[in-house]
Image 1 (cartoon, helix red, strand yellow):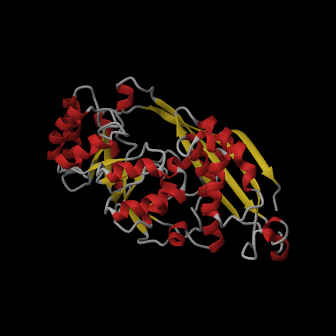
Image 2 (spheres, rainbow, N blue to C red):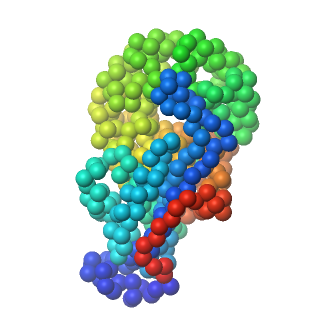
Image 3 (cartoon, helix red, strand yellow):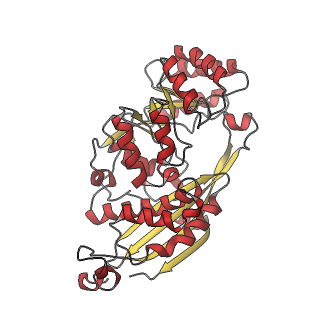
Length: 393
């Protein structure tokens, strides 16, 4: 352990008297999570993608001169995981000697370290893992769950399950999965749509709604696979199901189309998960293209960027339903002023030693400091590459 006096020497002291700690060690890990069953949504049925068999994760572990630690992650489905790891490896040394509290400054420094590859997409997704780790560290140092550090509006968030309703799953199994989800305490269900024959989607939804009853919150997700006329027709046909929202009915970058659809339907329109920057989300917000905004912190650059986007969304009184990565998004949703939703996926559970508590339709913020997660031995076993810079305290 390094003393307070030692920690303020060298780089830290040159940064000013307010710098009391510095980053001394960083470890990157490329982890590949295998899925038990290949997963298909409408993108597979349209031939644009193959079934998903694994998810690649970039984990960042950070330690300071005083021995404080933080962990963060980003991810990529299908292609992109090795690219994120490679970019993160190139820019890692830029954080050594820096004050871990200066998170906004460090985000900007990492962006400029790789400025020629831009401020969205793979580059900022790599930065996201660092950013999340620094926020985790900051909350742990304060002895607070991240939601409390940010300023929570609630200690639990409404949650819905997605993983039980993919298109590769037979309808009878979807119904069994729905029962299991609701019995586990999850509050709502999201079902994938986008079959080539829309009548098949309607039959499937009819079976689900009859099975769960009218009072259970139900959402659908078309994964960007409808054109504008199809989205309009299907949107009208779906009104009878009393949906919480219709998700990604159109291409993620078709803000104008989403805006026209949102204006014409009673059912709210949700989108945003595939966008890779705050600027791209702002175009949705500016055009009134979403009733429910669905940012993904690892995709847009981390928690620092998510907070900027959340402020814009709140200003427009939008609902918030972050995509995937519930281990991060539970905290961010808890800090959003308007009652949000968080998406439940059990896919990531083998990566961590801890489990999130769910009951009465809500996911609960634990008392554990930071994100409240530690990497499991299974995650270490699935690690394909590591890289370290600096020295441990």
